[in-house]
Amino acid sequence: MVRAVADQDCPTMFGLKFFSSDVAIAVGGDRVWLADGPEGPITGMPAYVAHDAGRVYAVGEEARAFSGKVPANLSVTRITNQGGFGDVNLSVAFVRYMIAKGKSRALPPRIVVACSQNSKLGVMDVLTKAGGRKVITIPPAMAAAVGAGLPIDTPAFQVVFCLERDWCSFGVISLNGFVASFELPGGIELLLEDYAIYALATRGVALDMDKLHEIFLARGLAGSDMIGWEAWVGEMETGRATVVPASDIDFRRNAQPFALRLDRRCRQAMEKVDAAKRRDAAGVPLHLFGPYARVPGVADLISKAFNRRVIIPDKPEESVVRGGQRVLADLSWLMKGAK
Image (tube, rainbow, N blue to C red; front, side):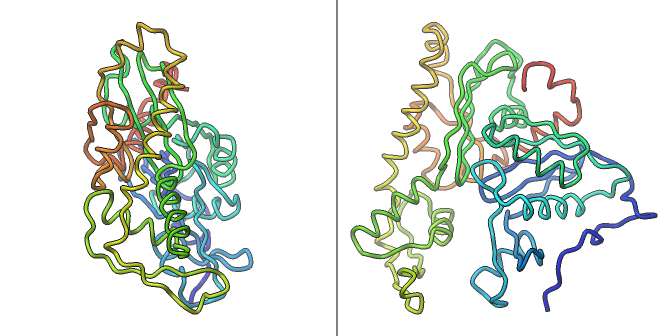
């Protein structure tokens, strides 16, 4: 039997959470990351909530496991949306539960959050309702650079790219500020959607995006390992599945349009920079962050899209939240230019 998730699941003393500490959060495309305090552990939780009639029954991995399975009355929703949150009530329940799984607190925590700057007002609203005493936002590209220990306080240029499932963030950083930057909705899903459109046009088969995403994570853009899977073929025929031969799935055919989108946005961002700075930044390598950094073929794709050598740091999927954690340790850092 599935029971609803309650606020009382976190330890309390006299009705209060004890041993206060602040948290850093990074809103990814398919996962939310949390660093519990300036030196605490980092955890990542799949951004899914299982719910029914307004009640939350499971979050994270447990919620994702319900997708397509019994109990049939439960709905499973991904709460992240293009670097921010989607459904407010579900997102509040998710964040509240995630914070409660960490250290106990006597006071509501301050929260440093790395999120899409287009979504920051919505993210601040969710985190405040989830119990944040003060919410401070930081651009993901800046957070990733801080988390990787790049020398962003020097005049030298640091080029950073964060690639997520449904959005991405680019920045050229110098002296603790952005020389050029952009955020692009879509992320790796743009590539997957292009492939899904191709499959629908050539085979008449509608592909499940979550399953397609799992295939991409496993195989990426390199080769065609034999991975069997099923794709449902439309609402009117949900009782029948079509098997798409794994050897026929090749995401590389759709990589070029995705790379061209990134190249165009990068050129537009750099047009606002004077010619001397453009020349200085031209040969600087790009630091690639996010859950796809080590997926086969992705680094090569990004290298060609930005015409730069790509450097992948240690644990690229954690760099953004680790940057927020370092800001937690010294909130005065925000006065140095990262706003």
